[in-house]
Length: 145
Image 1: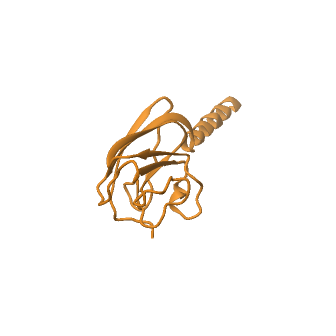
Image 2 (image 1 turned 60 degrees about the horizontal axis):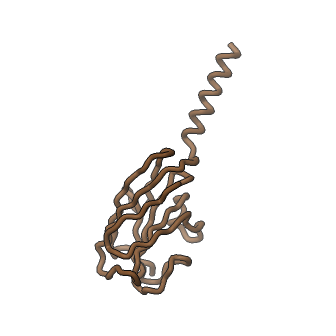
Image 3 (image 1 turned 135 degrees about the vertical axis):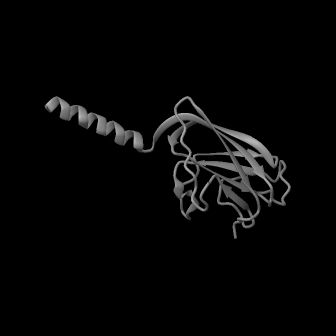
């Protein structure tokens, strides 16, 4: 009987561990499409941010895990070696041509996020050694005041 209880506790602990966020080392490819009115180029970029916490959408959240720029309205960025899942993706278009994504976005910046239930960010899970591909389309509907 003790052996059955021990085995049961082992299975329960494995199920709990599998249900919690953890490490992954997978890859997330993000196909971005900006359909807003701004011109995207080398000076006016789209910044794609990888987050490890859904709280990024709240003021005072932690900085992104990684940020990659795009200099065209449509393109792809790849985040390799994603360590913590679930992960979250957001985008910001710089209309000023002077923002480098090292600080909060300036007023007038168009924002978007990967979501199926706005305004809640959609968690992205990726298994170790695997690649997940997502598409994120955004426009000028949401802007930094």
